Amino acid sequence: MAKLKSLLKIEGTLDDITFYKSEDGYLVRQKGGVSKNRIKNDPAFARTRENNAEFGYSASAGKTFRQAITPLLFDAKDAKVTSRVTKVMTQLKNLDTTSVRGQRQASIGLQTTAGKELLKDFEFNLRATIDSILFTDINLDTATGVITLVNLNPSQQIAKPTGATHVSFYGAMLNLDLDTGEKSLEISNTVNIPIDTTVQTVTLTPAVATGSGLSFYFLKVAFFQELNGAQYPLNNGAFNALKLLEVI
Image: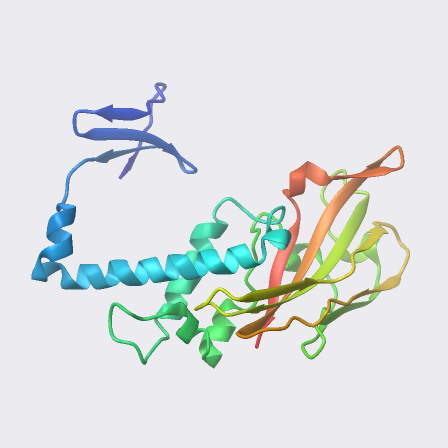
């Protein structure tokens, strides 16, 4: 794959060369390679088939995970969150030491201590991460899902984007079974405050999620601009942050 450097921005296929646009600019690639039928049936490509199968499992697990938190994720993600989640699921798959090659699963890897640590602290929007905008201790009670920010001074402890006048905090608890897709997502009360010098404690209390699977705990921060008494999302959520705080 090559990057196209030209005044002409071409999309389409010419002979055996394909021009296309991606998030990384205009790219060029040559058609060809091994036929799908050979990859599917030739014994020489057994490892390729196993790798393809496991990649499919990892991509599916990533999709299940992302869809389970759609109400949180829709306005707090970057353009590459899908590929980044799939990458982590692939790493989790590698921690499955019980399944044979071609059948290793992210869900099994996630059951391990190393797997939980791998997914923990995942930031869904690299343009605005919790660690880069919120400078205070985040206290999480995993028994209840309650998140507390004690004595928060918004003007000093929040790095607000230009134009933001208010900030909203949300907590959430998710129970998710990656194998079956069974999920229970509980989102806390919303705490919306002006970004000023008023010191206050923020307490986010979701209902306790039920069902099978592991428990995931999230914190979301969203920015707004007040105009004539009404608040509007800032830049369609480009600066909103969402972080996975813990997995148990």
